[in-house]
Amino acid sequence: MNTFLLLAIGIQGAFVLLDLVEWHRRRDSAAAPPEGRGAWLFLLALIGLYFALQFGGYSLVPRTGDLLLSTRTGIARLFHLPLTDAPMNPAAVALVSVAAFYISGLWDYLLHRFFSHSRWFFFTHEYHHLPRQVTCLMPGIAGRPFAVFAVFPAMAASIATVYALLAICRLPLWDLSVLKLLFLGILAVQVGSHSAFLRSQRWVHQALRRLAITTPQEHVLHHSVELHGNYGNFTSLWDRLFGTYLDPRLAQHQSRVCGLAYDQDFLGTLTFGKWKLPAAWRRRFQVGRFCNLKEPDGRDQIEPRPWPRQRSHAPQDYHAVQNQITRKENVS
Image 1 (cartoon, helix red, strand yellow):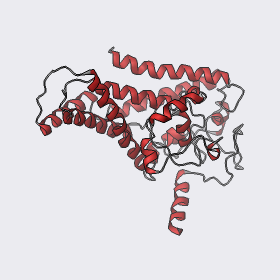
Image 2 (tube, helix red, strand yellow):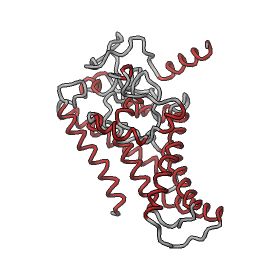
Image 3 (tube, one colour):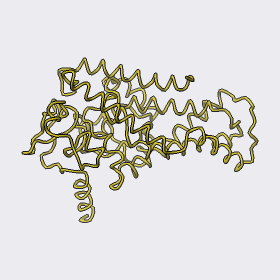
Image 4 (spheres, helix red, strand yellow):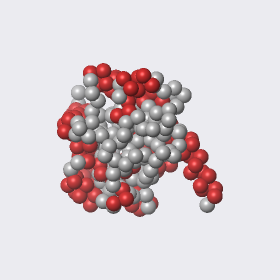
């Protein structure tokens, strides 16, 4: 197993362990872990299923190695560059990696905002916004069954960006150091931005916001029921430039309920809402701890302490939400 893969697994594993510690520390709050062996096994089974679907989706698109080779060859021909094995300057690696990080953030922002959150393609992203506990331990955050729809085009654009920058700077195209550094950096921020442990550390936001790197305090607002913004998964630069930035320091952005604004569960996000978990399963496996579920009379199954109650007039499904937005836009 190569060093890059070990580092990638290690980054994700470290945040999982940190969030397990945070879950244990907050076991008496609304963000408490499940109680009982059955609920834990149910959660682990869901994560396993979600990961299986995620990697199954990746198997349907070109392999990363083939994508690298074709992109590198195309860029070399476009810029009339020979594919030599000349050494790469460490300073150049760092400079190109930083530039590629923020440029790749633009492709990520556009895909996330206008594809994943569009009316017609939100079904590819709904599972990710299902958990009302934003932590690296949640199915949909750990394990993303339809991630390939956004991840593959974003990755392809990022690879093309790196090779274009190398070609413009007349640097060797054979060296993968920039790509490895870029993807490890993106992975660390994307996983860390969902970490409940890091979100409890105020210094993390203070340190990263100055670099326009997405912080856990910023990204949790993107997962809130009623707010719309902070689409950048690893940099807040483009949210700031395009007016969609939500500042977690503002009073109106505090104590927000996360999750979906309608009744949905883990099975429903895989079947586009056609089938959902039976009520008995929801109760037995404590699904209400992790999703915003409704009783038949419209009440929340579990009160989201200590956060305020979700609005009682919340739409019952995603399309109802979008129809409301569309009617408002038509009136205006």
